[in-house]
Amino acid sequence: MKEKQTGNCESCTYYIYDDEYESYLCDVSMDEDEYMRLVSDTHYQCPYYRNGNEYAVVRKQM
Image (cartoon, rainbow, N blue to C red):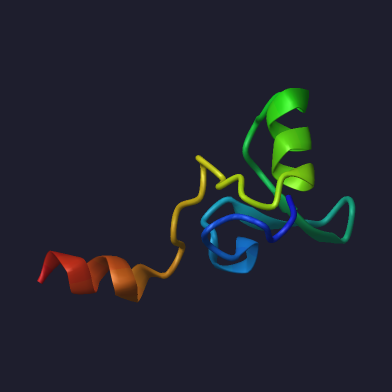
């Protein structure tokens, strides 16, 4: 995934480190059309983005 969505990929829950590729990647299973839209359209927002910041989630619950 590129960083063209509302949230930054680096803060997303699905952005994980893959030992086999030795790099970070998106762990969401999306089809080719969704991926191409995400990469090419600057206004497209990733529908799978989920904030991985546990502190922000807890703050909302208080």
